[in-house]
Every structure is written in structure tokens, then in C-alpha cells.
Length: 258
Image 1: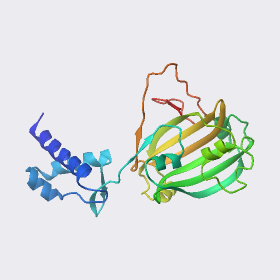
Image 2 (image 1 turned 30 degrees about the horizontal axis):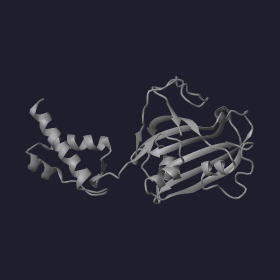
Image 3 (image 1 turned 180 degrees about the vertical axis):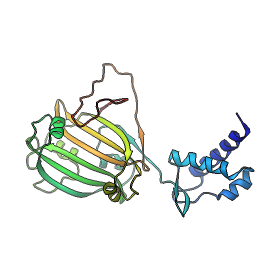
Image 4 (image 1 turned 90 degrees about the vertical axis):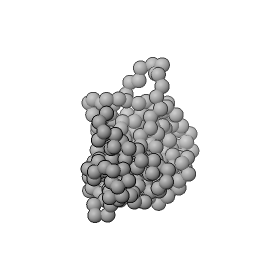
């Protein structure tokens, strides 16, 4: 390993330790000049080390303001649980801003996901999901009106899964499709991030037995989430139940079990 690479690694590892053990979210890191003097390296070496931690998500660089410690990421565990349940498990207070709650005709892709016919009536719920008052995700959910009649009659339920259980419908398994992309201007405004920022998009089909009870599409802030997937050796082949809206090929599929 060349001496220049070793110098880069020393600066990077020092900054990583500083960020994870001494600084808190929003703190600024030492200036390039101070780091150059401390380690006897060039500004280019310091910038390479900082760039590596920006890519890892430990640091945020803002043009004209400097480089700061990024907010702690929440592990987005691939498990069958509602947003509220996941945030409460982490000691955070969940809340929602309802953008729309209406009954609409199922488009072909929604109908395919819910195992119903196109044009059948479905409940459509569009929300911004918050934790401790901060926007974390945008979520759109659809449920068959025949499965849960009058879903919005008493207002929007605080928890879709909770309302299903109250009606004797127990969500017990599901399947997710996860992709990464850049957020558009509309969603960026809702999430409070700049347009073009990286986001995780998750499409989920939730089942109660053999009944597809919920289909949802969520957009998660990549600066606040890291995807964590526990793995096990399958006892049987895992066959994804592809919907019309999903890509024709994907590198990996994870079956989610409650």
C-alpha cells in the first residue's frame, strides 16, 4: 500500500472516530487547514477522506456553509411492521400529515397488486410520515373497499395495520421490492430535502393468509435510513409475486415474514 494511501486512510479513520464518538449531528468537522497540519498531508488527501465519509452518509457537505456531521440514520429493517410501530420501537414519536384520503377506481397495476379487477373501488391514502416532527417518508397505500368497507367513515385510521387487526384481518406476511433513485421536486419539498437527493423507494404487498390486503409505495429519505436485511437459508424456494408495476428483472428478492 502506497504512503499516500496510508495517509488518506489515517485521516479518514480519524474523522470516522471523531464523528461516531465525539461529535453530534450538525457539528462541524475540523477545517482542512487544521487537518493538513495535524497529519502532515495535502488538502487533496483531506478532501478525499472527507469525500469518502460523505459517500458513507456520515458527513453532509453544504455549499457555502461547510461540512457537518450527518443525522443518525434509522435502520430500515425489512420486516412486516407499520411505520408507527417501527418508530416507536426506536423511541421516536410517529405522526402523519394526510395529503389525500379518497375512494378511487383501481388502475391495472393497483388491481394486480391487490388481486382484484381493474376499475374496482379502492381506498387510497397518501401521507407524509414523520418521526419526532421531522419528515422521514412519503407513503401511498391502497386497500380494497370490499375488504374494509367504510374505512374512512370515522376519519383516517392512525394505523392501517391496527385497523385491519381490529376488523379481524391479521397481516402475517408480505413481500417488498426496494430500489434507489433520486427524488423529484414535488417529493423533495414534502421531505424537506433538495431535489435530486438520493431516496429509497419501497413497494410492499401485505397479505393476511392468501388475501392481499394492502399495497403500498413508500419513498424514504436515504440520508436518514440504512437498509438492514437479516438473512437466513431458505427452507423452500422464494418466489416473488410480481406486480405489473415492478421491473422485469431484479438482483435480489427478500420475502418478509412476520
